[in-house]
Length: 251
Image (cartoon, rainbow, N blue to C red; front, side):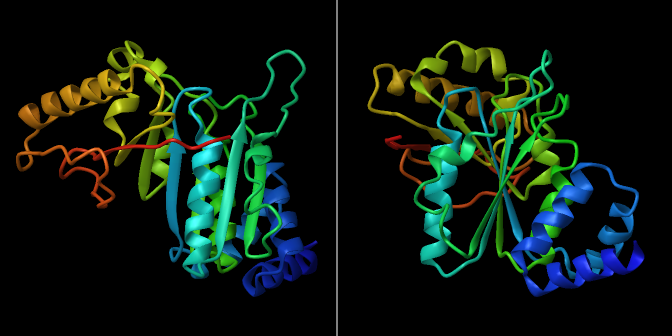
């Protein structure tokens, strides 16, 4: 099988879509030769910028992912997308329907979308999502978007897998923002208040700002500041609190 793995690795490094798909399948299924494959492509990883998109169920993560992918494509960047769907504890199956929301980019030859099942992982990502991102990285994708399952307070794996983490919320999150502040609310580089034309958006944004104010008053780093709701300036984890942006994405 060694020759087959080498062939797949060479195809991945050339950016061959079929080889990328086969490589991710080997990794996802835990095939014995997957370790050899990852070793072969490792020297070519570390180039792609990885963005995690997370938030509670129904917040619009797939729509945000679709729009971000379109934005990067307009910048002539190749985009890889890993969309994780929950696995049923009863049947062991997963719908893998996130790509239904990605109609703007699903037929683009420079966008690779891979749906993955969580397979019992409790951290919001598939157990092999990081390795799948390495394959997309090595295959020449400039940006890798990693969309988690709908999460709550403690599913925080995406923070360790991404360079930038976006937490997507909706006005209905309301009091849930308070419940999430000890976990999910602490990992964000950006907060996105999606569907902000709905009632309660202003109150939800104020709740986020209040939580960020608590963080800035207790953090040992330099005093933080909350940017305006329309800010798009990147922030780095561990420095200033996350900017809050509001959107009205239509699904």
